[in-house]
Image (tube, rainbow, N blue to C red):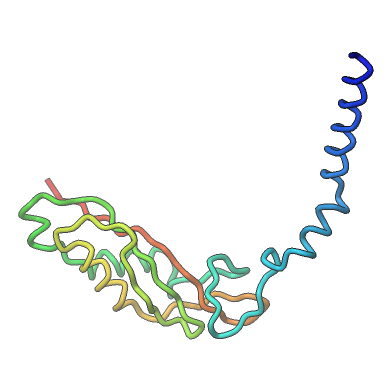
Length: 148
């Protein structure tokens, strides 16, 4: 019984060590093309790139733009609706904003208002992959909070 257990333990340990060897991991990465970075063509949409897109003027400028252009919907005010709307959009390789969609809304007109303001954003500084501007999917929360 001890001999069978010892042999089984040695086989399992050897298999585990083989699976963890750097050569095996390297081969898996080379064989699996989904782990490689795709060529940057005009139709590819990236979620993470070497240089992420930035709003012209930086994060403070983006927050200022949202704060000055967002109008709290009357329906939301009347019904005391507040919360966070999550918006998804694409920053194109020329910096323009396209494909604006609500990922999760709160209703009361807030979803439509968040989309409206995102659509009117000025051009961003586009993201870059391998030194070339590329399309990047961007997600952002838009906060709606009533003043007391």
